[in-house]
Image 1 (cartoon, helix red, strand yellow):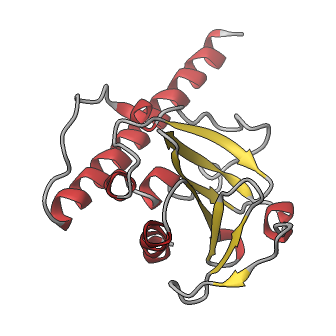
Image 2 (image 1 turned 90 degrees about the vertical axis):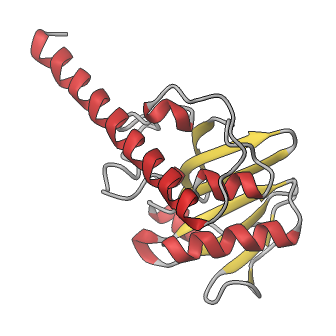
Length: 185
């Protein structure tokens, strides 16, 4: 790898870290403006590592949300909202691809919340084996439950559509997060 290639890679990593830090600062500002502050924990280390796995363009084998100019899933499903339903703010994310999309998942103590963009045709056409039903909590959304107990909420349409995935939460918590996501998509 030549000097220019290394410099370009470092510049991309710095940009990713800066974008992550901006999204985290925005999430914290939104949370502090929304009401009482969340319980504080140990201070973060800064940058995108606060979300868990730092996003690297193409890390899932093909372009993801950043290459398409979409907001990081951590900003669409902010830390304060995840914490309110039982996923601690200290929980780091993992970046993964599921049959229904690419995104981030936060898991802790039997609870998880994830936000996935439906970027590719196979994501947009994927149907859960159990079928989908209209959401009673979010207008225009639909829901499904997978055999393993994960609940999915499909929000939006076209290139900006997302899937909220929750596990280990009651219906009220799922509905709360679905409304948060619908307001940001």
